[in-house]
Figure 1 (cartoon, rainbow, N blue to C red):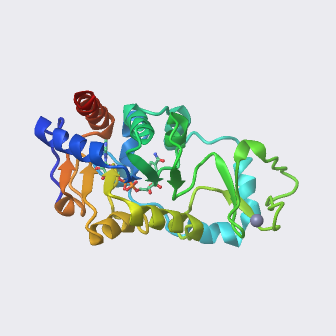
Figure 2 (tube, rainbow, N blue to C red; figure 1 turned 180 degrees about the vertical axis):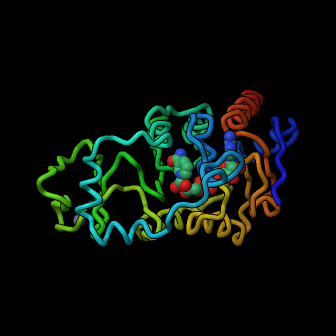
Figure 3 (cartoon, rainbow, N blue to C red; figure 1 turned 120 degrees about the vertical axis):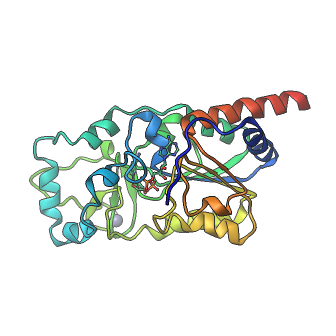
Length: 268
Ligand code: NAD
Ligand code: ZN
């Protein structure tokens, strides 16, 4: 049962989180679709989420791709569809939450960001240490050797589909991880190693029920690494979080940055 609270958390909770962050030199973040809500991109789950309204899509997308990659690519050359989710992604820009996370990285607080989002907004904001665990919609990946390239840098010819990898001849697909598709093991290893070294773990805008992404905050809890959550709704992680800030990340994160600046100015 989910309880929704509106508005920002109280100041004392925000101050506690700002204190914890300002003492951290190794915060690892797991971000989900809620992070991009203030950029105009709907979530899948949660209030107003696309699946909450329309139901879940078929879960065998990768099987369909492997059955006939040529057809999958041919459909990419069909006239552009007017899917409202794709339009929202195309028109999106990083919001104040994305910019706040870049500032926390520049301050030496965030050491790594694991994002489930495919929208590229963390990169566009300037985040450097990042694992896009579900891929990036502007990239292409080889399903055999896992090499990745920006879509723009690859010439895909309609007469020669599916496109193949110049390194290993494997089939290329969009980097976005499909339902039923395994996540490249090298990405999971990076997330695992970052989590093992964390001194603080922050989950933002994730329902924390999509695996294997959701295993990283659980791994942090098992290592007694304090967990902070930012989400307007209660999730399976809320009861285990040291502090659970209820509200939109695009508003909460800039408030935390302001409080950290105050803490830093007191120390000078
Ligand atoms: P989710 O859709 O399952 O859950 C979103 C979560 O965000 C919910 O718990 C919701 O309460 C919370 N939320 C809603 N508004 C928020 C706000 N303003 N601030 C903070 N939190 C807010 O998302 P998920 O857990 O990331 O998993 C779904 C998968 O779908 C993802 O793994 C991702 O690959 C994909 N997806 C990506 C995008 C994107 O790239 N922007 C968008 C939708 C879904
Ligand atoms: Zn390859």
